[in-house]
Image (cartoon, rainbow, N blue to C red; front, side, top):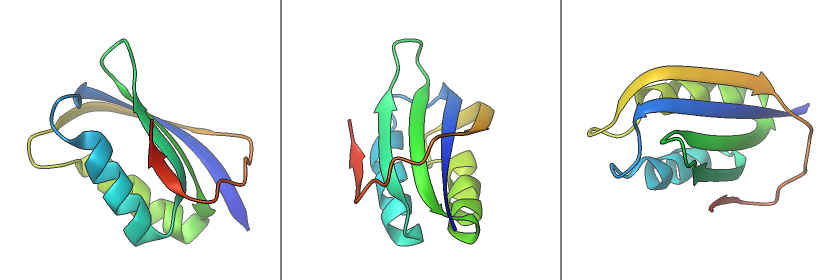
Length: 89
């Protein structure tokens, strides 16, 4: 069963390649959706996939790329949007 989750990542997550890392990890994990930078300095992610895929993706997003420092990670259930790919906004 496909699920939609919304993730907000806080810390040093902009200007460190976090969106590109997220897209790469989404493709490797079979996740669809998108990632974007927010005005408050956080990163916003909408992700869709099977629970097992999402579990792997969430773990990878909590780590982030080498230069990132994640200080807060929030996950919420979202509404299924049936994305066909994963993109950077």
